Image (spheres, rainbow, N blue to C red):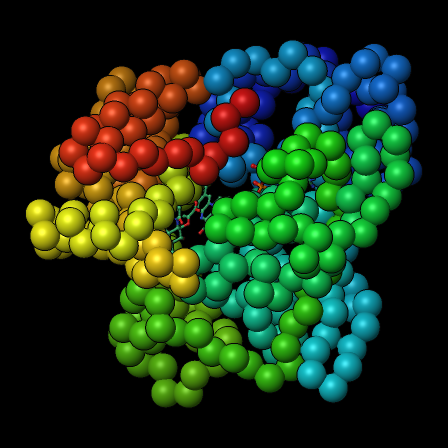
Amino acid sequence: MQILENISLKSLNTFSIDVSARYFSRFKTIDELQEILNWSKLKGLNPMILGGGSNVLFTKNYDGLILKNELIGIEKVKEDDSFVYLKAGGGVVWHDFVMYCIKNNLSGIENLALIPGCAGASPMQNIGAYGVEVKDSFYELTAMDKQTSQAYKFSNSECEFGYRESVFKHKYKDRFVITDVTYRLSKTPHFKIEYGAIRQQLEDDNVQELSIAAIANAVIAIRTSKLPDPAVIGNAGSFFKNPSVPEEQFDLLKEKYPGIVGYKNTEGLVKVAAGWMIDRCGLKGFRRGDAGVHDKQALVLVNHGKATGNEILEISKIVRTAVFEKFGIEIVPEVNII
Ligand code: FAD
Ligand code: EPU
């Protein structure tokens, strides 16, 4: 066990915010994790678990212990006529896991290609993209209680998944380390190409025979064309969630703004594209110092270089106020603000 002190987190968060952690350690095995948890208990700390750092905004130096999850490995845990159950260590890079499934002809998460971060964080906010969410293929996970070091299994329903939500963001916030996740992948492909520009991209790619690899490639092409690469420009993907409003409210907005984008869901609510609203507020490409709104996707806030977390947070407040004043809709952050 190696505990480092006053470590820079700049290369460990995709916003590239230059803050430091009072204590920092990594774990590659469950034994190492338990050893560090024992140490942190003695210090009276509740460590923060970090995966790829692609959904966090640090607003100050972290005055505690940050633990980087480096539990790797993918294994088949069972198989039946229709499905293969694959378990991934919490530190496995999510996109590598997606590619592993595709290579083995296992369908379910191909639409989630190129989402940054680690497998261990995938259930945290039920990651989703292009018509698919983790909850559609998720089977179970193992989580260790940070205070008692006891391990528990959580099934799909026990994770209480919702849109960018899970039990780990509410009832069990900051309590567990997710050490592994198991997905139930289908041996028969179920193609989902209705969302957004996938169909068009498949046509542009001249795909003659549909396959999970072709879908992943289409998703990768679309994502690359509009989302900033964190290696080039700091960001954490969508900064806000898309808000849901009652249908009547949406219909009134539609009269006033015929171009407004919304998707009806089952509960009589319409999920409104926050990026469209921010764009219509004239904020796409808005910049103050090194903090700003991405010029191709207004839902993404960016660090052009040396922005601080608070400067990004300030931009987020400007955006929230503008959207509320123009559309009367509150938008809330998706990113974890630390
Ligand atoms: P981190 O940022 O390291 O952590 C996120 C939160 O989870 C923190 O609170 C952390 O403490 C906690 N956590 C992480 N790992 C564990 C663990 N093992 N146990 C307990 N707690 C843990 N998200 C989407 O849903 N859809 C998208 O399409 C999408 N696109 C993105 C595009 C870009 C360019 C970027 C930068 C981000 C995007 N995201 C998207 C957000 C992000 O990639 C996901 O939320 C991802 O799952 C975060 O994984 P991570 O390992 O980086 O988590
Ligand atoms: N739009 C604009 N201007 C913009 C941005 C978007 O007019 O600047 C319009 C688009 O033209 C489109 C609509 O808004 O009609 C929705 O845009 P897009 O398809 O890009 O998706 P999004 O709602 O902005 C969501 C997720 C993404 C996910 C994509 C694809 C949330 C908060 N975001 O973005 O997830 O990749 O759909 O499924 O739900 C993330 O969570 O970090 C993330 C990137």
